[in-house]
Length: 80
Image (tube, rainbow, N blue to C red; front, side):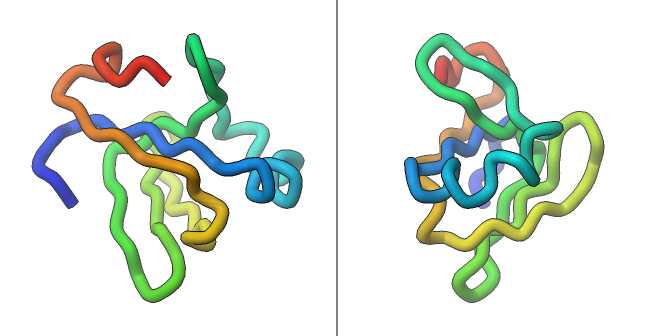
């Protein structure tokens, strides 16, 4: 994982369709996309392990459900 302090993860259409209900408490609405705010992101096999920013919970998301992830020192710089 990069050494940046903030991360935002955006799911693809398939991921949103399959996981929207389950992950709803973790979503935040950005200017362009709905994303999950994270403080840590690791890939373990075919999963991304997202440590959520606010709740400090590890979410295991299949890699094929992720459209993109961005890292920044400042949360507002990502702009999703």
